[in-house]
Image 1 (cartoon, rainbow, N blue to C red):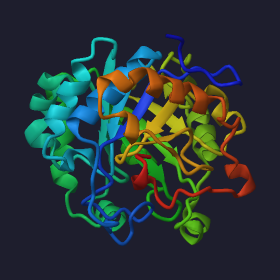
Image 2 (tube, helix red, strand yellow):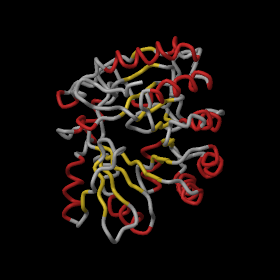
Image 3 (tube, one colour):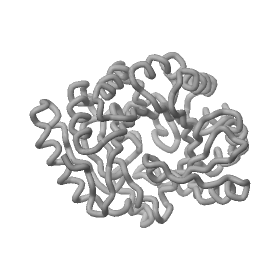
Length: 326
């Protein structure tokens, strides 16, 4: 079957699959009041996930990132990894986690088929980490990062959301860490969502400012890899780690879009912003529905917009990033 492609020529081989919107952290930029359930949660089950992954694999998806909320809060998280890994068309399985279960489970997840892991760590100052996340788990998460490196993951990344007035003085600490540690550090520019306009105005820091500092300090822009998407990656010969910048307000950010999102309740989202999502769940119950599901995916790609319109102050319907996996 033909690969998913939109009318702007962008091809989509990367699926971010949310398996829960529950999270046990209270990050100020995402869930400042903590997770608040909306009725009884009925997240995708293993059979639905298997059927979803099967359909996406037939239309060119080769990489799946399991997201949340906090995906590892699912008791069957290891089983979810196995379900995805059982599809031999999926070449890369990744997850994004706050790391609270990583120390104890890194090896088991690797053995199940997980190969790449992103750990959210917005500060290397334990006090600031607590202020941002609402959890006093800095040491636990750091031990989790060490466990991931020891388990042999192909790539360990650290995600840090840039926050003016909070972690914007942490850059020297991060640079010192990756001088001798082979991890990819990714600074993510704060995005405005429906619940965070005042927070955005108070704490937004342009990623371009960090990029200027890196170039002045001798960091070189790497040639993009096929699955880098919109990230701009920088390296230096005297550092084992790399730095990546994700800058959604950069003029050409959407030009390299290669990912789609499915929420924990089975809605397809063509973008983090601008639209309500399209329900797929009615076509996830049986394998014999796959042709119809694939047809729906192709039909929705024809409606994908060229950009997210964040530059115009339009944040769409997304209230917080935990709702559809960031």
